[in-house]
Structures are given as C-alpha cells and as structure tokens.
Length: 458
Ligand SMILES: *Cc1c(COP(=O)(O)O)cnc(C)c1O
Image 1 (spheres, rainbow, N blue to C red):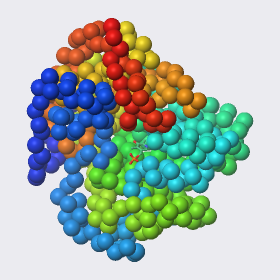
Image 2: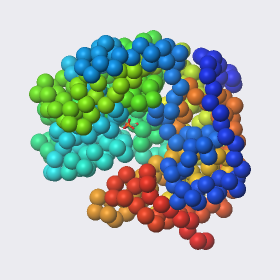
Image 3: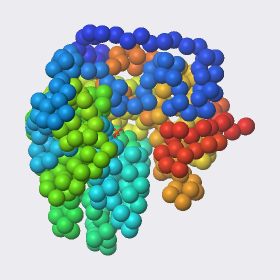
C-alpha cells in the first residue's frame, strides 16, 4: 500500500481561480444548458473532470518552447523538432501533423473507409466510430469479454479478442482496410492492452495482409501499465516499451491533447508511402501545409517537449497514483467503480448505482447531472447517450452506462480529489432518489455533445 500522501513532482508556477457557486445557482445553470453538461459555461464548474483532453497544465519548459515557436509557413524549425520528437518514440516513415486526433482519423478514414468495409477495434472511441461511419464503413468493437464486465479484475482489460478478430478476418478479410487498437482503451474504462496481445493482433494482421494502426492517445499510460503488470517488463524504460509497441504497427493516429501533454494537436503517422501521399493531399484540403497541419509552430514545439516529459517515470508514477487514489477512495466509500482503475480516469458504474433508472432513461447522464448539482463537478457520460443511437436512427442500451471522471494532467491537487470523493459518496448515498432523463432534441451523430434533455417526471 503506497503512502497516503501523493507528492506531485512539480510545484505550482502559475494559478487560475476556481469560482464557487451554490447548489441553487448550479440547478439554474444546468437547466439553462438544457441539462447537457457540455453546454455549461466552465466558470460555473468547480472541478472539471469532463475530459483529460487538452486540459492539462504545461510545464515551464513547454511555455519556454511556446516562445521559441517559429511560425514559418513551410519548413519551420518547430516542425523539424516536432517530427523528430514523434519519431523518437514512433519511428514511422511519415508524420502528418493535424490540429487534433479526430482530424487524423477523418483523413485516414476518408482514404480507407467506404461502404461495405468494416473496421475492427478493441473499442472505437466516439470520434473514431463517427469517422468510420461517416466514411460509410462499419465500426466493430472486439474487446475481450472481460472488458465488458465492470467489476472483474483483469490486468489488460483493453485487449483485443483475438478469436473474434481472426473470425472476422477469415470471413471478411478483403473488406477490412485496417485493424485499429486503442491504447489505452478509453471507452472501455481506460484499460490497457498488453504487448503480448498486440503481438497476437500483429500476427493475425500479417496472416491476412491487413495493416495495423494504433489509436495511441494514451500510449505512455499504456506503456506504464505494461511495465507494472506484464511479465519481464518491470525493469524497462517506458520509452523503450513505447518503441516496441510502435514496431508492431503500420501507423497511428494521435491526439496530442492526451499524452502529448499539450493543449491542442495531433498527428497521423504511417509507413505506407502511397497512402501517406493521399493523406497529405487530404491534409492540405482541410488542415494545412504538411509541415504544420492545423497547428501553429509554437504548438508543434509544445508537443515536442511534452513527448519528452510524458515518458518520464517520475511523472507517470505520480499520474497513475493520482488516478488510482481517486478510484480507491471511491471504492472504499462504497461507490461502484470500474475495476481495475484505468490510467486517465475513474469510471462510475451508473447502471449498478441506479438500477431503478432504465438504460433508455440514461442512468449515467442522471448521475453526472447529480454530481454537478451537488458539488459543481463536471463529468461525462459514457453510455447510452453516447452510444445508444443506431445508424438507422433507432435507439438501444449501450453495453455499459458509465460516468467518467477524467483527471486532467498536472492540474488538480490531492485536496481537490478528496473533495470529489466526498461529493460522489454523498450523491451515492441518496442514489435511489435520482430520476432519469429524456432527450428533447438531438443531432444525427455524436449527439452527447449537443442534445437537450429534460427530467422524466416521477
Ligand atoms: C481523444 C481521443 C480521440 C480524438 O482526439 P481529439 O484530439 O479529441 O480529436 C480519439 N481516440 C481516443 C481514444 C481519444 O481518447
């Protein structure tokens, strides 16, 4: 059992105020927002755990690099520093910068997706699924069975089900333009994928002649889990584990807003020359010239520095301890959480906590709203609101109804997290009083961002 106190391996250099609100003010704010947490003004939020994406604090070295950024349109030194930092960890032949992860997905899926094709993944993240479907292809989730059981302990719950993947490749291999593996498996609870499983996926991809791509947003956290949990990996440098992971793949998409330790950015990297040329042409159409993509030179520099910091063991030890501390505190307070705790977030099992709210009345959404009203905590539903709408417009329950408490990197202290645990425990203690919601307005895709809701009368 590690000591109770987490020593953050940094001291605070610049602070931003948090605005206190009353419960009555929050009830009014969420009503005005159509009961959608995305529609709140962030000043009305006390602790923002909506996402760990782009919300982290940059280091003094990164801020110094922001000053060094060179804004030349073509061939900027910032671009060369960025490209070299990416290739240090992911030695793919081509690196294509984008303004964030989904732009890389959009480009790759425009090049490879088409009606009649099917793209397997351990679990597609929402933007990945939306981009596969927008290209007319089918997005298939093939995570191992253990990944669907929120209370089951397993060291690598993000692993791909190799049997199911092989069956798909055997039956429909020619319809599969690529296999994706998401590390860590965000939508499945931030759970890692083992090196052994990745080797198994690689072998199947080789056998059936299909390229393997990583959705590598949290590669450093995944590599830390491999170091901690996988046989023979305990003495290795995380950076070496990352290079091992990269050597198993043909390419990757990346959001630098996660393990890039930056506020914006991403990239697509790959080895296939012909495909890279097509992707660069698509990049120019919507993102920009190939040496900046959708980014300013200063952003490229901040990412380059972030990539050197994110693989430092001191940082990763603190990072994983903080998330674990939140999960362990909630578990001890009797709040059902997905086990084991993932890398970047703790997932509350809303379906277990609110068994009286049917999935189509969105128990995850109901719990997330209650945490906001009670304590000003903003979280995110990962469940039937996010995944329940089918491509034909009908609706069915998602496999799980979770509430994600995503922990921004280097942003909140241990006392902030203690407060979060207190609020969650208080709300869990009166869970039986919480009612469900219905949707009054929704867009055709990614509805969780903009849908409006109202409470179901009880
Ligand atoms: C965040 C994320 C993306 C998309 O990246 P953005 O930068 O938000 O566009 C894709 N996949 C996973 C697993 C993610 O966590």
